[in-house]
Image (tube, rainbow, N blue to C red; front, side, top):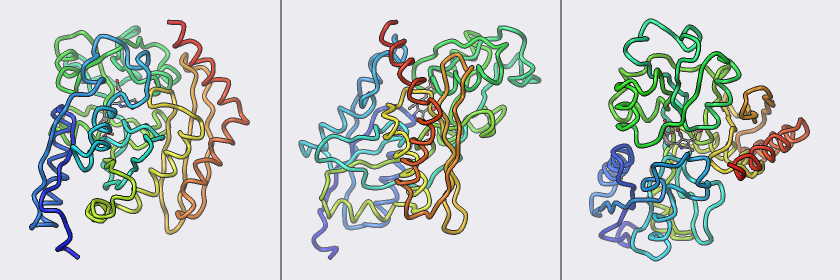
Length: 319
Ligand code: DPM
């Protein structure tokens, strides 16, 4: 069987330092598992890397960080692409599929605090302290819990954001624990936000590898990196988001856990002012992950989630 494997496989990746750390990890793992095959990385910029002066939520969400990579998978220039799963839309272009989900890092959000506030927490920051985030999900949940704070958009890759914080343009910023740890900046984590304060983004902390549907050779290579519990949790989370037709830039948060054969999914839809949070929970067998996600989405819809999302879509269109 190994004899039919290609001698060289091409991996597509974004150019950011975090993207390259993640892609090089995949390249290293596969290199060890398939010593007869060479894995080459091809990097490219996506729209999300180029447009830095506009709030993320306003440039639309359809494959902002993935489309250029997807085009190259489709036309055969690369065999698969490594993404942060949370940046991969829940509906993929015709002919492409999610080939593998890797083991998840801690999916939580973390506070990174400016030096002058090292002895404070979000709750004890002074009135109108400025928190940098361009995530509507973080914004809505934190406004709900900490109405005394001011929120300001922040863009750029992780390096840029930490520089802007250190320069004093912001008093605190919220970033994924996973990204900070992978960059080797775990020591910048001031406080990890518990799920009661911030439910994480769908797929946060896991890598998603996208490839051509039905490319059995590539799929069999990728499956060696799949982490089943992470995949089950993320399939439930992605089905939840897909059913709500939310792109990646919506105030939708989740939390999942597996105990024995039971998967539990918590989901939330929030209004941008943080005043309305619709939240619920479902549990069921791990092998019904996607159905659990759909069920939860419909439960939230019965509680007004669709009206919240429609209002946000209308508001973003106006601005
Ligand atoms: C998506 C969001 C953000 C990224 C929205 C969200 C954060 C944007 C911001 C969909 N993608 O989370 O509600 O904070 O302004 C992104 C990060 C990672 C992957 C950085 C981060 C690393 C962590 C991971 C940007 N994409 O969230 O701190 O692999 O999960």
